[in-house]
Every structure is written in structure tokens, then in C-alpha cells.
Length: 183
Ligand SMILES: C[S@@+](CC[C@H](N)C(=O)[O-])C[C@H]1O[C@@H](n2cnc3c(N)ncnc32)[C@H](O)[C@@H]1O
Image (cartoon, rainbow, N blue to C red; front, side, top):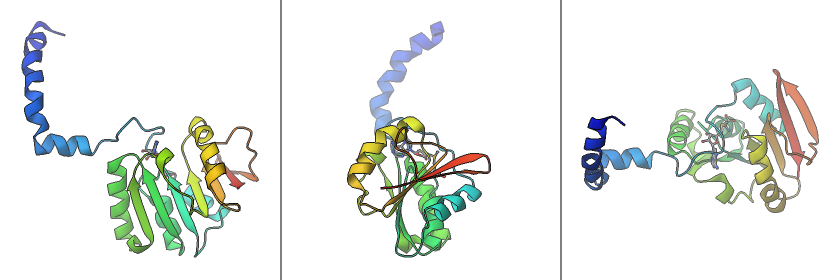
């Protein structure tokens, strides 16, 4: 820290209580994830979204949960196939984007987007769960998936496996792995 910064630091700190009452700062903080996300906001390319929905055999009557939904593309594509869906993301900015994209696609009545940590989400009514998170996150999520999902629920994961929970199907699509488990 330069001498000038050091001198200014107490002044800067003393302005924080005042700033925290400022709408701009509150908006800024309210738009940040509550904690560091477990996976980065890198979306599945459209060809992979299609492959995931096809492998999960998504159709009207399904309830599709995308855990870590990003801009909502998987849930929206599922809704365009007649399913209903819930997208969950820890990042409020992603959920806002997903909500706008759902409105633009005219599927808002069939989808719901929720800002929360996916580990706290109740997804017991899912018939399909989609994941693009990471092997370590999948492993932490695995007990919850296996204990809470109903028998017959399809779980698809872009790129990442579930350790020794053997998938029922594994494909390579465009050089990426795609897995399906049936609970
Ligand atoms: C790799 S992106 C996948 C986006 C989307 N599912 C797709 O396949 O296009 C992972 C997303 O998970 C979200 N995420 C990471 N950790 C999370 C957590 N603990 N709870 C909810 N969302 C989380 C990130 O904010 C990010 O948007």
C-alpha cells in the first residue's frame, strides 16, 4: 500500500456505513452471489442442450430441474418441448437473465427460476435433473440426488461423472461427455 493509500484508508473505511445506506451499493451487493459459486457461469452450447434433453427423453409432462441453471437455456428449451421446469442458480444476475429469456421465449408460465444454493433446493418433484457443474460438486450432490429423487428420475450431466455411481449411458457429443443415470 502506498503512503497516500494508507492515509486515506481510515477515511475510506469511515464512509462504509454511510455507503451501505446508499441504494446503488445495496443494489450492487444484492446482485452478487451469496457465496462463491461451486462452478463458473459457462453455458452449455446449444448442441449440448439438445443432446441433454434428447438423452433425458424430455417431453410434455416432465418436470425438469437444472441445478446451476445459468441463463436458463436448458429449462427454457425443455419448456419449448412442452415440459415444465425449474432453474436454480446462486447468482442473482443469472436468474434475472434467465427470467428475461423465458419471457422472450414465451414460456414464463411453464418455468420458474429461483436464486438459491442448489444444495438447499427441494427438487423431489423432478422427473429430470440436469447438471453441468464439476465432478467434485456432483460427488457432493450425489447423496441428495439418490435419497430425494423418485425412482425412475433421469439425471443427465454434461461432461462430469459421479465417481463410482455408474451411468446407465455415456455418450461423446462434439468431443464432450454426456452421462445419464436413472435413479
Ligand atoms: C457451468 S454453468 C452451467 C449453466 C447451465 N446449467 C448450462 O448447462 O448451460 C454453472 C452454473 O451453476 C451456478 N452455480 C454454481 N454453484 C452453485 C450453487 N451452489 N448453487 C446454485 N447455483 C450454482 C453458477 O452460477 C453457474 O451459473
